[in-house]
Amino acid sequence: MTSQEVLLPSTRRALLHRVATAQSQGRAPSLVAAVQRDGQIAWSGARSCVDGHEPDGDTQFRIGSITKTFTAVLVMRLRDEGLLDLGDQLEKHLPGTGAGQVTIFQLLGHSGGLGAETPAPWWERTPPTTRPELADVLGETPFVQQSGHGHHYSNPGYTLLGSLIEELRGKPWADVLGREILEPLGMDRTTSQAVAPHAGGWAVHPWADVLLPEPAEDLGLMAPAGQLWSTTTDLLRFAAFLARGDDRVLSSSSVAEMHVPSAPPEAGDWAGTYGLGLQNIRRGSRTLLGHSGSLPGFLAALWFSVDDDVAAVVFANATSGPPASTVAADLVQIVADAEPRIPEPWRPLPEVDHELLALTGPWYWGTQVLAVKLLTDRGLELQPLRGVGRAARFRARPDGTWTGLNGYYAGETLRVVRAEDGTVDHLDLGSFVFTREPYDRSAAIPGGVDEGGWRGLAL
Image 1 (spheres, one colour):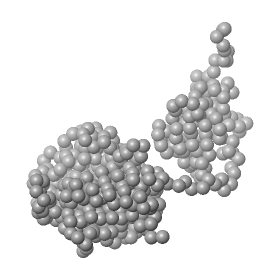
Image 2 (cartoon, helix red, strand yellow):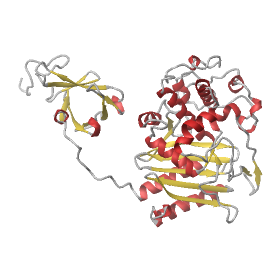
Image 3 (cartoon, one colour):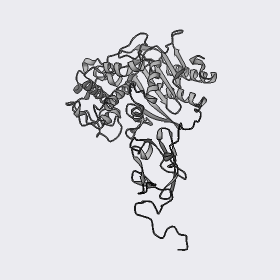
Image 4 (cartoon, one colour):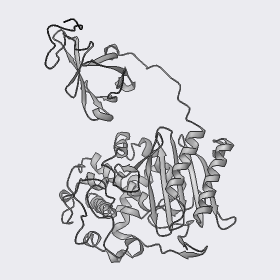
């Protein structure tokens, strides 16, 4: 079976129709897209204004701000190596910028309050010699709002992160990127400068079907915010990594941190949130992660659904016109809706831990009833059995406790509290006491239990 036969003919036609419509209505000189499912490229397609000269999975396009996600991964690697903490102020590692009070976490999630763009002239259409120093990137007033008070997208913020990487690694950002991400993931067609075959960038006149070539400037210090060229094949490899992690680059737990929204969304026309180098949007009941990108002459988008294990990439060589981000999200939705993921077969756990098994079943927080379920790798899941409650999954720690992974209890500690005779008295979850009976008189419940016990209407 070839990659093009992985999907049903009706699904493949729906994908081609969406891409063809986007190229035609968006008046793009060319548009190329590809979809990945279960780690395999399941479909690719392209449309071009030149007959017989369509781009393919090996054709480079400029990906603009998708570059930021690569930069964020490099920063997370520094954190995992203990070279920095995300809560560190920039000044600790990169002094003298004039923006040193902003934290690394805030820079990653665009909540540092820095301006969206550099001082004039427009950095995307000017040579790097225009801004030889960070002071030229930030200007005299780098902050437009108070740090930590919400999301405000900032290209200069990612320039600071690129300079931070260079400071701590002692090598140029592009060299670190190649050694630590591109080489391990086999992304040999992702480069800082265009390498043939590559598309040329074009502007399409808004009121006439005529073209104007766009310049392809090297971005210099701004490179970590938008420099890269890539292909659909390479970016789908990157999407697979961003969904699951890869210990050669970044662990699954660190990648999962990047998925989580880092600040309330900015007011405006973008209905989404921002994690750490990743955009996060909702499409119906589906969460899509990824990033969009643009530079003069190019539009790009990468979206993936972890739950559906589907990813899509869209490139166009036009300054504006085709909605690349919308099209990529549509391609994910087409595949996920038309051909839902088939679950893996249920299998029992490889062995029984009777102490853990004894913790399963109903528990009571006061009068609310919840159930504890045993997961793989000694993990636990807490689910309300009636009404609305706080559900969460927990990862086992070596010390016999568990750490919350999501929701209200994310990061909180769940532990078993035993009585003097060794039997389980209660579960403690962030100071909340869970007992086997509602307000169990034999358990150590804060405030105690009324001596009269439960009673009816006739007191």
